[in-house]
Length: 587
Image (tube, rainbow, N blue to C red; front, top):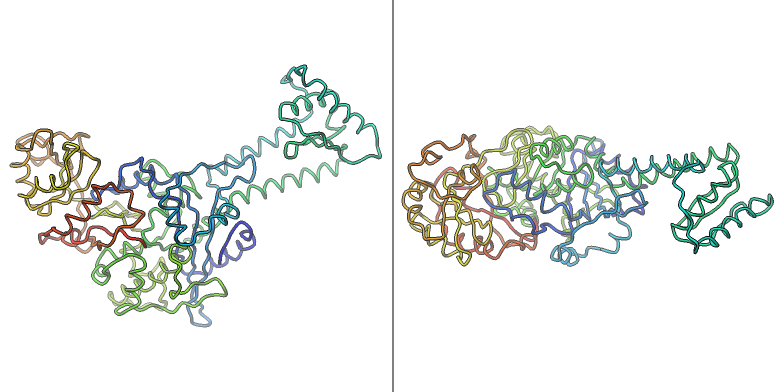
């Protein structure tokens, strides 16, 4: 079901009922852009905290313009599974002077991408549902309270009068005279509309009027820049007008809060929320509809876990055993094709009324459809896991209490990062960087220069930081000692090599020194255990996508060339290295 500002209020009670009845919900979002280019690109060796800060600093000035919500239910009486789908158009149009007037970024490739998939921009700007986060809601409430206080003080004597310039004296005098004449008759019109003037002249008229009259004599208000004078109201009429004004302002505020009410309903339900590669979606949801994202990564995790107590990322599910062995590609459209065949099984989920999609449709990158596909896939993956773990469940829909999902709930996939994820319930897994080096070099160097320099040590995976620096991760970790003993002392002029730990500890790219008192002699900062073998990430490699095309040309070369030549050594992290990235049109 398509939901816009036109039908949002009417549909909201139905949405609330649907959320209350469902077992779980699937979500998806569409954006005006993905990366501002002002922040460094995501690196394969980023920590989860670094990854979060890059999203926070580089992606949140774009808008979330479409939000898909699909609720999956079990009808106990009819013994069948059903779903209801909603596709929301979202646009932060200021509905009053008190509402914030949002500034946002657009990325040409993202807008072109949306347009090529039939996105209706006219509907977005004309009928998009507004929203406020808690901070903006508080600001708007404060402005409304201040406006009410100003209304109470209308007509009171004050010392803020402005001297009337000679060129405006006649205009002000004519306005005041017309008001005097209007009030002198008792059987004339009930209100007087003055000729349009600018704000400064209206102030002059106001102050002259309140010199002569009080609120017991008349009422004056401005509508669309035009002053309207009304005869004094009775006490009953004034009370009724004040009541209506208050109700109108509260209704205006509620309309401005708009779509944020849906997110609050989802949060209050404490139901399982499913998404695919959903970190960016969740960051936007928190930032736009709840509160601005905190600078602290730990505070972000706590906020996210508070708002959504149970989340399930289908892309993360496919990155660990046993699903990574059964899923060759976790691109959303590829994944749907995979779970439509053995050993998976698609559950028949019937639509409720007209609020529905079908797996036979082709509406990719409509948020509602992608959310439906995500939910359908989640059911198939969940049932596969239940079968592999020999868990018998009375209901085949995943939920927050499904015992076989304990290892995947509240863990978020990190695109490009090869060996970690975000864990909302405990500390993130520590990343082993024993064989990762920070290298600086002349700007004219190419990928071939770096790979050639490390070739005696089994080759490297290169993750570019900028045109003069990169991280180089050894394919054969046992060669790290030889790099420090042999390569570091002999690097060419203008080139430096430092361990990953030295750079992160000291904030400098100073070369590794043999026999120094630093980490090379065993004094490396203590780290927790790395990912277990069971949790090793296995990331399929597929075609690049427009969303990732902002990566530098060198980064593109990094992804393409080394992967063809890479020979991996057997180790517990073989799954990690085997298939590093998944960048495609459909995630």
